[in-house]
Length: 86
Image (cartoon, rainbow, N blue to C red; front, top):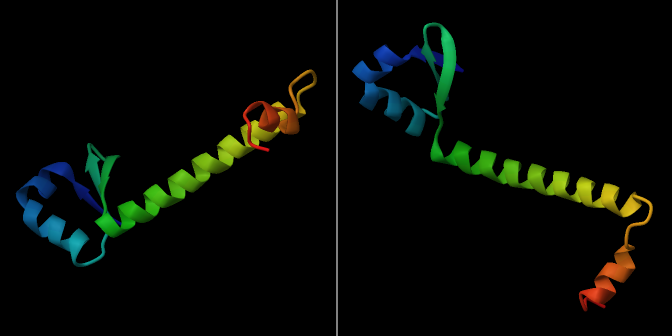
């Protein structure tokens, strides 16, 4: 992954965008030697969003399973019945 100082990226902004959009590069922007942001193609962003949504869904599912295992909680079947899902 390429790294580029923000000041340099400003000078060649159009070229930087073209490298990402058409050259399929991912560029990390740095300030004072520290990574502060990234420029990625829309294709990469869509893939990341899809991955993030799936990951969040997985976390939600794990939390739901843990809640169902807690003593004294309402069972899955009872919850479905109360919500009219049966």
